[in-house]
Figure 1 (cartoon, rainbow, N blue to C red):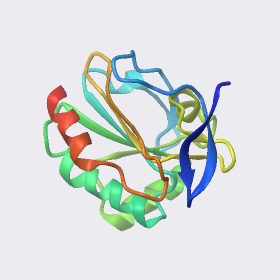
Figure 2: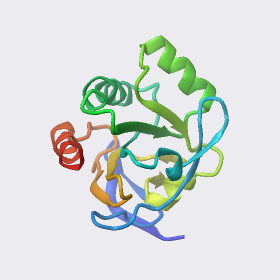
Figure 3: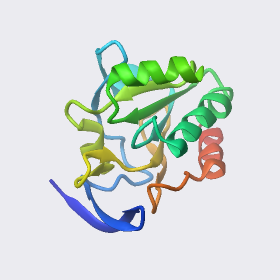
Amino acid sequence: MEKRTGIVTFAGGPITLVGPEVKVGQQAPDFTVLSNDLQPKTLKDYEGKVKVISVVPSLDTGVCDAQTRWFNQDATSLSEDVVVLTISMDLPFAQKRWCGAAGVDKVVTLSDHKDASFGENYGFLIEELRLLTRGVVVINKDNKVTYVEYVPEVTQAVNFDAALEAIKADI
C-alpha cells in the first residue's frame, strides 16, 4: 500500500497517510464502510446523487463536531440530489449516539473502523493513529471526483466556502 509523508501534520507533528492521493477528474474509488445499524455501505448505495464526503478523525472532538454540524445545516439544504456522508473511524454506536445528542439528522454518518477501506482507497488513513485525516471529497452523479481537500493540519477546519462552491457546481 502506498504511503505518503510531508502532506499533513497532526498538532504540528508529521504523520503518514496510507493510500493513494485522490485527484479531481478521476473516477471515485469504491469503498465499504458500516452504517449506524452495522450494514455495509458502498459508493453504489448513493448512486445518482452528488456525494459530499466529509472526513473527520472523530465526531467527539470540537473541530469534527463543528464540521459535521455545518454540513448538516448548510450542504444538505442545497438540493435533494446532494447526500452528505460523514466518515470517521468512530464506532457506529458512537456515531449514532453523537448524532442523537447533537440533533444531526441530515448527514449520514458511516464508520470505517472495520476495514479502513475508505481511508486506504482515498488516502485519508493516518498510519500512526489509525484515524482518518480531515478533509472533503465531492463526487458528482457520474462518480467523478470534482473536489478534494486534505487539510494540511488535522486540527484545523476544512475550507467550507470552497467545498460549498464545488457542491453547487455539481447540482
